[in-house]
Amino acid sequence: MENNEATKNINELGTTAVPQKCAEIHCITIVGQVEGHQILSEDTKTTKYEHILPMLAAIEESAEIEALLILLNTAGGDVEAGLGIAEMIAGMRKPTASLVLGGGHSIGVPMAVSAKKSFIAPSAAMMLHPVRLTGVVIGAPQTYNYFTSIQERIINFITEHSSVKSEALLELMMRTDELANDVGSVITGRQAVELGIIDALGNLGDVLEYLRAEIKKSNNNCCED
Image (tube, rainbow, N blue to C red; front, side, top):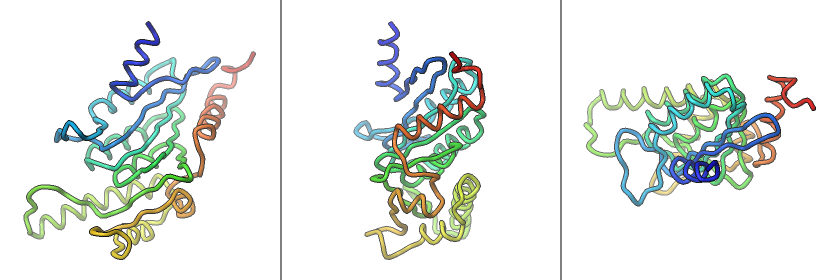
């Protein structure tokens, strides 16, 4: 029965629990595009924010779950939804760690840095670019001010939860000579660490080792024989 429930959670929500001797690390995945208020097409891989937000609240309140692992391989998506997820993760008191695999692009950057410690695989990459909107855009000063406001919220969140400087971040977002048909830049995992956006290079074993150490710190008697 437990195996069936675990399989169902992985298939439908991209979530499962990593059992330990006396503690549990819960794992959630943020993949594809983050879906916000607009439903994306059926052929697009999505992470629905209405699934993730209550899940994070339940993890924080659970007496059985000791830590949270966030796996990211996302192309970005809805800005409001992504920032909402990032704020929820940043507000958790339990140990949290994120691991960027493949890509942590666009609004995936705030979600990656929202954990207490962020990791990125050496082969992974991150794309930084200005805020973009789809659909009808009214060419008025108010539109420009709205864009600027959203971008400031994103930059402020990233700089508050990492060690990158806002000037360096804005310069990466505004480059015009790196991306074809777009403004911005793509950085490797190593560059993300050197810039201070991500805390460390690593992979699954490194992240789990960090979380287990944090669990022991918060509950020294939990893993005693």
